[in-house]
Image 1 (cartoon, one colour):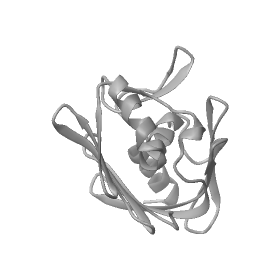
Image 2: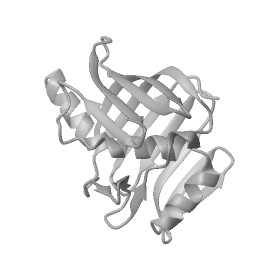
Image 3: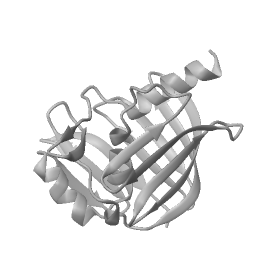
Amino acid sequence: MTCKKTIIILSLSLFSCASRAEISENRLFSGLTDSAKYFLLPPSGIENSMDMFQRISAFYGGRDYILNAWVKADETGLDMTLLNEMGTNMGNLSYRNGAVTFSSAVFPQSIKPEYIVADFQLCFYNALLLRPALEDCGLTLETTGNGRRILSGEKVIIEIEKNSKSVRFVNNLRGYSYILEGEFH
């Protein structure tokens, strides 16, 4: 499989969902389930600012994928530069001033960057802000030590485990998972 095909499969599997992100009431959202619209929180909800390299090891459809990213996130916004194993820029994402932009000559234009931002927020935003935002769309957030679980009724749809060196994200509903490696606080 060529590098470009691998990148496209990775991007589709990691960052897309069955439902489509759209702007509703001038607010960006991600469909965490087919009926639950999670409205993105402002950048000020981040627990700890970061400006770091991250290695992404993803699993989808029985295959493993590797991707790198430079992530800068603070109370003013989120910026990601996605890199291949050779360090070549494959795309840029920005979430600032209520807008999400994503540009890439490699990834398909059909990628909805709201899904990437939503996953990021579920991992790194303050649980006190996430809980009511998830309740507003009919989901429940459970926190335990270094873990988070998002439930739809009794069903666990997303599991997150964090420590100082890695974050493990499992989307049971959409069938993908990844591990972020970096220097997390």
